[in-house]
Image 1 (cartoon, chains in turn cyan, orange):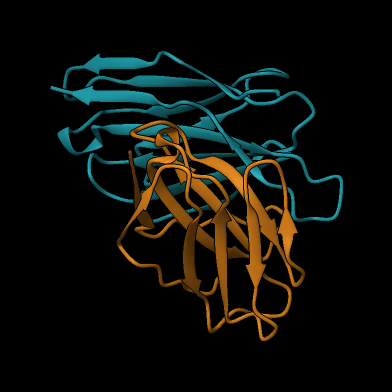
Image 2 (cartoon, each protein chain N blue to C red):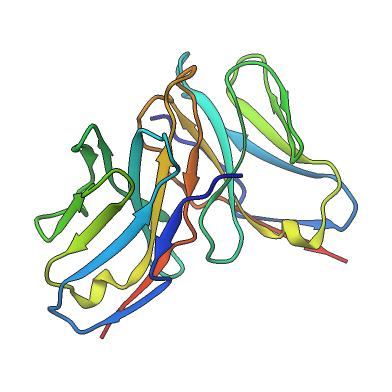
Length: 116
Length: 110
């Protein structure tokens, strides 16, 4: 089965540094998402992206966050100046919506971000 | 999106059927019921979804009540590898986000 690929699997950074988390969604999927999960907590929606622009974002997704699809295959999440509370597992997901409209999300295996 | 209510935890013996309930009494007519699971800290994995009719695939069966206010996910022969957090989510499909709740932590024991 096709997979969403995320790199790196682990990222350690110093507070205040910029990080870029990378994702390769499933080929031909049209909608892309970032979620995060702080240890022991729920999976939280961050942002959805379609047609090269943000469709929706949550309150968590403030000015420190940005997303980009720099080419035809990658989808990135950038955190400009990391804070301790940004430490979490970040999941990328993609969805194909050329059918009935109920297509499922496919999730990647995540990037564990640790901010020191 | 409608909210769901799930028991926080359940146990199941290996080889037996695991029946995971979900209440979604405020579901709208165009909203689907999705089930995902998360094994340890891996990415959520799609299991099954449905609108009105019962559904079955190679992983599980989904039983939706006639009034659509509740559903049950059935894992017919649970294995130790089915130990995970199971999420019941209602959503209107399309490009809309899925909102995860706390889910049900299913422990399958020998």
